[in-house]
Amino acid sequence: MKTKRARAAARPVALPPPQALWFELMQFYIREAWLLDERRLKEWLDLFTDDVLYFMPRRKNVPRRELQRELTPLGDLAILEEDKRYLEMRVARLETGMAWAEDPPSRTRHLIGNLKAAPLENGEVEARTAFLVYRSHLETDHQLLSGCRDDVLRKVNGAWKVARRTIVLDANVLLDKNLSVFL
Amino acid sequence: MGATRKYVVIDPATGKIDRRIFSEQAIYDVEMEKIFGRAWLMIGHESLVPAADDFFHTYMGEDPVILTRDGEGRLHALLNMCRHRGNRVVRCDDGNAKRFMCTYHGWTYRNDGALEYVPGESEAYYDALDRPSLGLIEARVETYAGIVFATWAKDAPSLEAYLGDARWYLDTVFNRRDCGMQALGPMKWLEPVNWKTLVDNCSDNYHVPTSHLSSARVQTRYLGRPPLSHEDQFASPNKHAFVNGHSITFRDADDNVPRYVHGVSSETFSLFQEYHDATMQEVERRLGTLRARRVQLGNHSIFPNGILGLRLALPRGPLKTEFWHFVLLDRDMPEELKRVIRIGSQANNGAAGMFEQDDVDNWRQVTAASTSRFGRQHPQDLSMGLGHAGPHADYPGLVSERYISENNQRLFYRRWEEFMNARSWADIPLDPIKAGFDGTATMQG
Image (cartoon, rainbow over the protein chains, first blue to last red):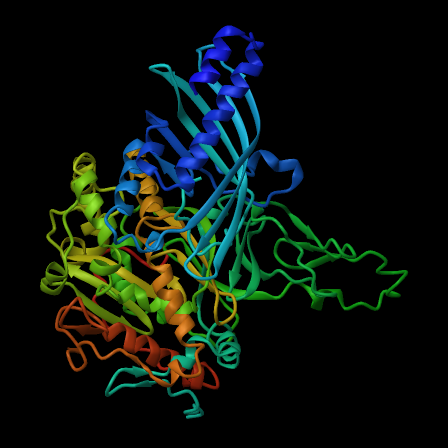
């Protein structure tokens, strides 16, 4: 690390701002993916602001000309609509040793890509990513969850945090026995 | 009578159950015909099709069904199967349409089921097609307090007779207010579980402190909800009641305590209390004093596949069930209370629900054990509380002495036998309506 940092100091490269932002956010998402897959969930919780909304709407079959109805709006029944306290409660639940859906825990692999990022006027950033999450559980249960995340990120004390996450699954009837892993 | 005794799966003296009913395709096929082909099935809610020409796509067992409200406001349950070849005429989950066109050859049906247009009716069919006889197959539809039921059986009794005295208890949630309820949902997911285990689990209060202790503990810590233990459950004054296949659990309530579970926390409790107090006079007018003040409905199932109110266990073969989770809310409840209950409901139940996600691996292994040629030689044991239930002076149905009991579950499998052995509805016994339905609430709300 020292060598790298020394080299960077000696030969500063001024990346154009959009590229720098993209690079910074991609690192954020890669770190997040590893925290989830390594089951470091308390550290994962730190990636969210205290006022976070972690939202997963339902996705309906509607005609192409009515696609504005495809995702259920906030206020309708959702799959997840969690604040920070609910997320903390879910993580604390896993630590009781009796959260049977995840004990023994799932083996997951979060692949995050296709990042598009756009700064907002208030200093926050909109970031859109696609994900493929593989879940293997117990002996032979397995499932591939695919979808996208629409995030709003905010800098808090110099570090990016997710202030709002909307997770859109590419499924109508969820094919998994339950949704007990974080996306 | 014409009933056979082919399906004898539970020994009433011991509570032993033959595990083959959870896994055998041949038994499942008969269930589809004799249970799902006959019973009144919950298929949706009036609030899902509020306006003329609205439709909602649903299922009766494995059969896709379109719940429509026609131009005159009448409800229809139509088999989603073109009468020509069988293609579905609706592929969307819901919407608004006067007509449904089959995407194969263009046969077009009105939303009351009538076949309105056939391409080439003169040229290709020489005007010989008996179009009036080729409408979409229609089920009988009746509603209870806005919940829509349908049956394929022409000889089925009225929905009122089918629900019987179970409605005495159900009214305390689903028929509580003049304003009626609205449904939100469904959230849909596929569980590797036989449908009957989800249903019988509705009366299984024994599993709660083991299956759900992690969720109960963190909700006590984070939300200030009361703790949960086996000891509390065993000492609980709650009871089972069973009527016509419907499994009720209920408690003799303190009339000053709000009736809700989902969304209740130390912070939101006052909202629930205010609502309870503000509406009690109306509820008492609708349900009478005993039901308004002293009866609280707990977990329950409506035969065959209704789970805790309007939630559906849709069979998808013997080893799979598609689960549909809705939330029902009083229509004119304060918005903040609706929000809190909705979020609480989806956080507890549903695919990602903290409580419900812990059930599935237990249930699926019950199903999986039934596929084992060796394992299934050994029956399930449902002996809990045998001999400790009977008629009760105050409460309708067959009532258990205790809350933790397998009384309802045993009776559910007995009801299953009655349907499976019956040749027609004439062979299926119904308890007469005997309860005192005090108050103004009716089947229609």
